[in-house]
Image (cartoon, rainbow, N blue to C red):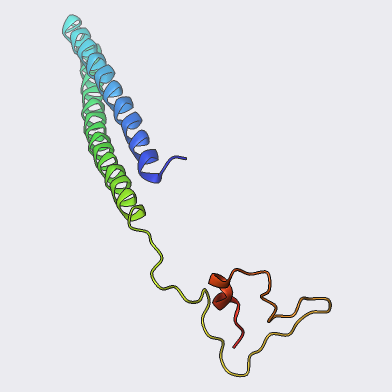
Length: 140
């Protein structure tokens, strides 16, 4: 089963790859539009249109690059968090040991008592319970 940190790491790594690829494609498109603007410099309206497209593609490329960098950083943080959680869980599980547990539930308030249902075994019947666990079933 995947942890949240693992899922986030995968999501951010995938998003980073997408945005880096989109940034590279848009940078290439900006270059082509720039070349087209230079090729038709004698036609001012068309040259301005290509130059505008080149600038827009360049700005989009820059934004995708920044967003890709953000996702790459988040993927690294998620990976570090996943590792920290794994180490913490391994350390905590190695320390689990019974330490004087007496009861599973709180002591009921005064005036509250169990009311057996018809056909229910008596509440004080602990004949089939190991002696180690009888204390858990004591009724106050």
